[in-house]
Structures are given as structure tokens and as C-alpha cells.
Amino acid sequence: MWHCTSCKSTCGADVPLPLETAEPYKRADLTPLHNPFPTTNRLNSQSLADQWFHTPSVKHTITVPATVVLGAQWGDEGKGKAIDQLAPQSTWAVRFQGGNNAGHTIVVGDTTLKLHQIPSGVTSRNCNLVLGDGMVIDPWVLDEELSRWEDLTGEKPEGERLFISERASVILPFHKYYDSADKVVGTTGRGIGPAYRDRIERVGIRFTDIEEVLSDSSIIEDTVLRMNKQLQTVGYDKEIQPSELSSQLQWILDRFGSAIKPTGLMVDLALRNGETVLLEGAQGALLDIDQGTYPFVTSSVVGRANATHGAGIHPGHITECFGITKAYCTRVGNGPFPSELSLEEGPGQHMAQVGHEFGTTTGRPRRTGWLDIIALKEAHRISGYSGLVVTKLDVLGGLDEIKICIGYELDGNPISHFPTRASDVERCIAVYETHPGFPALADEDWIDMAERSRKDGTGYDAMPGEVKNIVDRIEALSGIPVVSVGVGPDRRASIAKVGGPFDIVWDEATF
Ligand code: IMP
Image 1: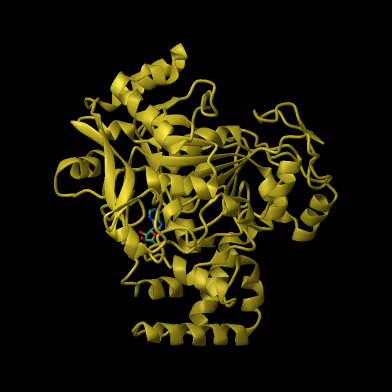
Image 2: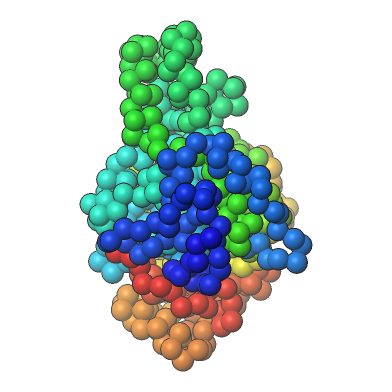
């Protein structure tokens, strides 16, 4: 047994090591990790499975804290910041769906970090990172992200505290070529849909399959034949060669072999050992393949129900599920958006400019609009948020009035739900309630307000009346307790509900 001295959440716990021979992780330049798997890159899956099999399940009386963070709109809600704040409380951060169509921006001091696949929990060095079963992963993009992280911090987490699920699917260059033919949805062009399509057709390559595929030239040839036929159908004029696919797969194995693990077993074992797990959503509720504005959606289930499934653990582990919403709305790509405003003038232009509303992944300008309570309630129906984090409230500063969409009119009839057909949502006319605006403040003033709220323990009372009024209205209209309010990009620029789950002392970022 290794007595953990570094972990805050399970302080003083004796942590069983996966193998008798395993040593606690130690490196001169890093804080020791609370990590029962630091040496698993040298173990085969069977020894890990043995350890997992012999560890008793958690009894009903023991809390099993898995927290989920989800986008409650059309993505880009500011999930990265909430995750960055919660990560120091967690020993594992798991991405469970999507791929590098996601873009998380984390700002610490002067450093802005844009992540696409690495879980945002990376900023907390005690946090193990998992790219989970439900993901589709572009290994070349991951390589770039990891290089940027190493340049910034000197750390190489892959195989040490960053693990790739054996069950996750590989995004190959083929998938990107194929995705570039999309003219309808306005995808990010990152190959996400085609990679999931291959998975559903049961012809995709998962990370666990790479070795097998490489050892059988007939699989390589069949795969290339199929890919080339598909590329022809979308007018792509080049052909992929078998040698090209083999060398791509070999590179993945050489680069990431030590990080590819049965991560579901690892996360489950961590929970049974009393550790805390953060499940990081990507995209947003209205982009869900089943529940969103189909076909203008992404290719995965983004809600709470998939958070555990895509991480390889069961839903009973979830204790908290936070929905993240901006104080207004944005959407990238095509599809209906009932509360949309013009980007050319007025409040829509203000939101785009003040909120820097450009896609993290593609750089495309985001469409902007007023906060839509109907859409938010749809998201809550699917994922059942235990708390709502309202982000970018500061962006609304300087507007004369602030509107909130509280219903729609469809073909002359008032409705209070989101129609199923995208063409019906397209015809919905938003109905608003209007509130007085509040003055614009400088970033430093918002940070001061947030710091004051923490120092004095006043929470939302630190906000001026008109600002607090918006928060109160969002809570009353959505029926979801607002647990934290973002008032700037800096990690300090958040005001937490007193006594709520975000009313915590954050650890300093590790870089
Ligand atoms: P895909 O996920 O690349 O297939 O794109 C499908 C739709 O989802 C497009 O409208 C994208 O712009 C949108 N989308 C995908 N990922 C994100 C995201 O992380 N934030 C916002 N929109 C996204």
C-alpha cells in the first residue's frame, strides 16, 4: 500500500497499487501524483484487469463522486473554465465523446491555452487524464497539442498520467478528406462524422485494433479499397495507398503505444478506491445527435447519459451534473437558432465583438443571440443538471437592455417547447422578456468584484443589482440552481453561490 500524501480529495487514504512491484510516481520536477497507474504503461492489460477484478465494488453507503460538466447550448459555453476550477478536486478527468471538433480555452494569467482533445483537467497536475471509449481521436492533432503543452510546462503526460482508451476510434486523414465534402451541416471538417460513421458500420479502427490491422495486409488492402470508393463518391481525386495507411497506423503505435489502455477499468477502479472523477463534455446539448436540431448536429450523444457510458463506467457513479450556459447564446455552423441576432449591428454585434465569438477550432465567426430558456430547458430535460454555471455575463455590460427568450411563436401559435423538426424550429419566432442593462466594466473590475465576493463571503450579493437580477431571472425561468457566474475569461473572474459546489478554494494552476 502507498500512503498518498499529495491528494487533497482523499487525503490520508491508503491507495492500493495495481501491482506489488509498482512504485509511487516520483519525478524531481513534478509534484507526486495521486495515481495508482503511473507504471501501467509497462504492464499489460491482463495485470490491470486482474487488479480491477479483485477490487471490491463500492457499497451503497459510500459516496462515489463522479461529476459531469456539460454544454447546455450549442457548444462553446465555457466548459473549460469550469473544468479547470473543478479539476484540482479530482484525480481523474475524462473526455467521453467527440474529438477535436471541441475547443476548450483556458486562461491563466497571461497564458491562453486552447485544447481540442486533451481533457481540460490537464492544468491540475494531480489529475490523471483519459481520452475515453466514446471518443474519436485524431492522433496527429493530439501530438501537436501535447507538444504545445510540453513547450509550456516541460511535462510529457502521455503514458504517465494521460491515457487513450483502447476502445476509442482513430480519426485518419481519410476521414478528414471525406468530411471536407460536407456542404449542409457546416461541420468543423475534422473528420468526426466519418469516423463515427465507420464505427457504426463496424469497419472503423479502434486504438486497440491497430496492431492486428498492421499484422494482416489483407485488412489494410480491404480498408484502403473501401476508403477510396467512398472518396470517389464525394469527388476526391486522390487515392490512398496501402503503404500510406500502414505507415500512418505504425506512427500512431510508435507515438502513443504506451498510453493506450483499458481506461474504463482504470476509471472504475479509481472510483472504487474512493477517488474523484470529472467527466468532461464536449459540444452542447442542442448539438446532440439524438436530441439536438438534427441534422444540424454533431455525431455523438453529448448528454449526461453518455458521460459514464463513454467513459466505461456505470451511470450510478454520478453525483453532480453541471450544465454550462452563456448569459446569451452562440452557434457555429448551420441550423436553426430562434433567438439569433444580426452580427452586423446592435446587441448581436456587441456580443460577437466583446465576447470574442470566434470558433476555437475553426476560427469561424460564431452566430450570436439572446439567451434561450426554451433551449436551456430542453437541455435540462435530457441531462438533469444539478447546477447551472452561467458564463460571460460581463459581455452583456454596456447594452441598454437585456432580453431573455421565454417562449416561441410557431405559425401564429405560442409554444413553450423545442419542436423536433429543424424546419419547424427555423420558423419559430422568439418571445422575450426585457430587463434593464448594466454598465460595461473593465476585466480588472470584474475580477475585483469576484475576489471581493470570495473574501467577504458575499457571493452573488457582490454584484450590482441589475447584474444579480439577470442571474436570479435565469435561475427562476430555467428552474436550475445557478451555482457559479462567469464575469471574465480569467479563472479568478467567477462568482460562486455561497455554500454551493463552486464555493471552493482553487489550487494555483500548475503553470
Ligand atoms: P462536427 O461535429 O464537426 O461534425 O460538426 C457538426 C456541427 O456541430 C457543426 O455545426 C459544428 O459547427 C458544430 N460543432 C461541433 N463541435 C462543436 C463545438 O465544440 N462547439 C460548437 N460547435 C460545434
